[in-house]
Image (cartoon, rainbow, N blue to C red; front, side):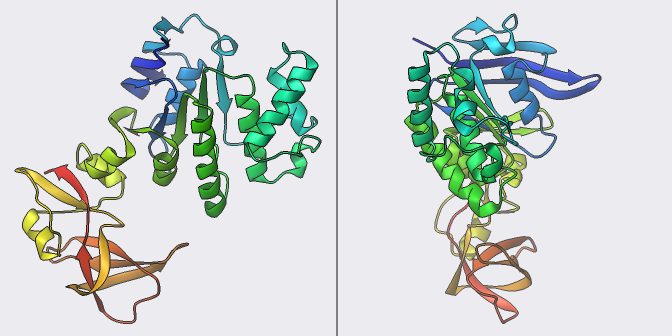
Length: 324
């Protein structure tokens, strides 16, 4: 039985700079692990190391227990998808997808290309050139080309980051469906929390080359390992159980725990606790209202329209349980 991909104690250095520091994780067959972190966190460097594009300073990359150190990039049978797609502009879409299928007879290549176009929602686009495609369509073609040879793993480096927000969200949903339908083993690099939660079965949070936490999206959001992880995930205020109850929360905390308040933790409630408004910002979805909590910390609450008053009433409906 295939054991999948294993990163074991991997360290990557650029001269004296440590880009990835003793990271270990496992990607089980048929699952996707998201590497989530800010710019410079080491996530893309780790992906390149897995692909064989970046030499290791220490540690091992293994597939099914086999050390891949002596295996060249093109022999690892890993599909790669990058931010710009890297399609061949002079080839048709069909020829781009068939690029890695040279060992198959022509009829089988054609059938596989049609299958991939259907999978990514571009049936009938085979004769077009990449220059005739939108950014989202081009990334679908890049995905189809990477999946066509049936790689044992797929490595994706921020493939949606160049797209606008609305399109990125739609394609993230489509990408998650495609990866699950094909039972793909994957590593997905992103700086976007929602993308990671949508696409990945497990999310690894990286910061300055260190792996801070590896967990399911649900566990990561509900119980960050520490305040550093919680803050990166958007939990900026941390309150005691007494303060949480004052804001209407009905849960309980253990000894030495606090509740992290994130973007969706507070809801407008005409019967809730009154808090002062500090600022308001219009976002793509709603108005983000910044408020002052009773203990002096700040948090945000979403409103469908701008609030024409100096205060609002809110109720704390959830949060992340974090060690104090």
